[in-house]
Image (cartoon, rainbow, N blue to C red; front, side, top):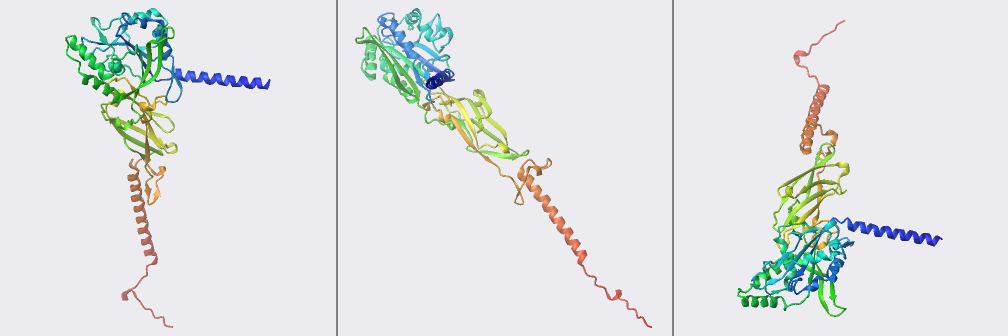
Length: 449
C-alpha cells in the first residue's frame, strides 16, 4: 500500500511537470515564421500533380507540429498559436533573364497568404485537414501569362525564398524563421551549372542571358546574415519504393552570436550616482542611437539589480537622444543598471528578424548581447575637516552640491574657531596683564607718630 502511494505521487509529479513544460511552451512570447515554398517547375496543377496528394500536406502538417529546443532548452512547436506562416511558389521561367519573379506569393479567396497568423480559422493545421483548401492553394498560377518551360533552380531556392520578404510590403516582427520546401529534388547540376543552363535556355528563347553575378550576390548577402540549417526531411514514396517527392525543413539562423548592444546604442561605460538630500543618490545619463544601418532598436527596458523596472522606451523614443534620471535610497543601493533591449535586424535580405533578450531566444540571435549591464559609481560623502558630512547637517539654505555645502560648513566652522580663538586671547590678555605705574602715579605718605 505504501509503495502504491509512492508511485501515485511520482506519477502526479510527472504529470504536473509535463503540464508545466507544455504551458511554458505555449506561453512563449517569441514568434516563429514558417515559410512554405513549393516548387512550381512543373506546377502542381500540371506536371507536378503528386504535390496534390494527401501525403504531401500530411507531411507538412507533421513537420509544423514537430518540436525544437528554444534557447532555454524547452520544447517548442515549429508552429504554435500566434505564430505566422506564408505560402509561396518558386520557378525560373526561361523567358525572364533575371530572378525578379522567381518567388511569387500564393493567395486564398483573394487574400494574400503572407504572414498569416496561425490561430482560429486561419490555423494552418486546421486548414491542412481540409484537402480542398490545399488543392485550391496549389491550383493557382501566380506568374499569370508565364507559359513555356522553367527551371526549379533548387540550389538557389532557399536564400531566394528568404530574400523575397525583404521587398515584401507586408512586414512582421518574428524571432525565428523556418522554411519548408516541397520539391522533387531534381538538380540541374550545381549552382553555377543551373545558372548556366538557364542562361543557355534564355538565349534559345530569344532573351539575353541571365547574369550570374547578380544571382550570386543575393546568395552571398543571405549567407553573410544567416546560416541555413537543415532540420528534417520527409520522403514521399509510392508503395515504399523510390521517393517521388520530398518535404524538407530548414531554419534560417541569424549570425548574431557576437552582437553587442553598444553597437546600437551609445551608452556610458559607467554611471556616476551623485549624493543628494534625503539620504539618496541621483543619476542622470544620456544615450542615443548610433544609427547603425544594420540594427534598429525597437524597445528598451532598464532594470535595477532587484529586477525592478525603472523605465522603458519604445521605437520612436529611441530614435532620438534619451535622458534617464533616477534616485536611489542609500539603504537600497544596487551595484548596476541592467539594460534589456529588442533590436530589429536590418540585414537587407529579410528585414523581419527581431533579436530578443529572452532566455528562450537562441544565443545565435544575439540574446546575450541584448542584456547589457553598467556599473554604478556612488559619490563618497563629502568631508568637513576629515569628518563625513551627515545628512542631518545638509540644511535647506545650503547648496544642493554636497561638496559646496561641506565647504560652507568648513568656512563657518573655521570662522567660529578663529572667532573663539580671538575671544580667548583677549580674555587671557585682560586676565593676566600686569599694571606698571609711572612716576607720577607714585605717591609716598609718611606716617609719623
